[in-house]
Image (cartoon, rainbow, N blue to C red; front, top):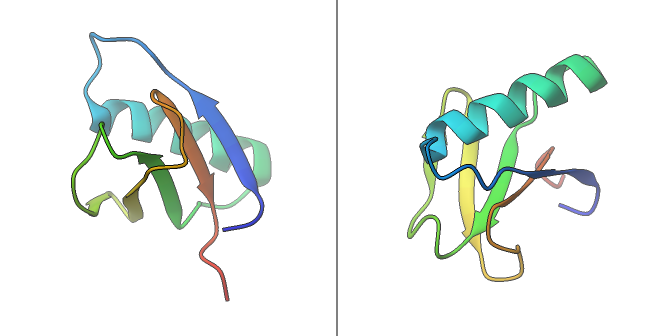
Length: 74
């Protein structure tokens, strides 16, 4: 993913799924469509999972508590 929206959520009382859902809702409201992909730091997630229709993938380059949402590369 080359272009996307960066979201910060360091609220320790929320689960990873809740954080992703909040970020996805904001993305959808702002851009008018659902993101396909959400990249998170490897410390937050060990292997790929789905939250709703969004693929959540761990990446070393993403800062902790940050969520990079966007579309899968073509």
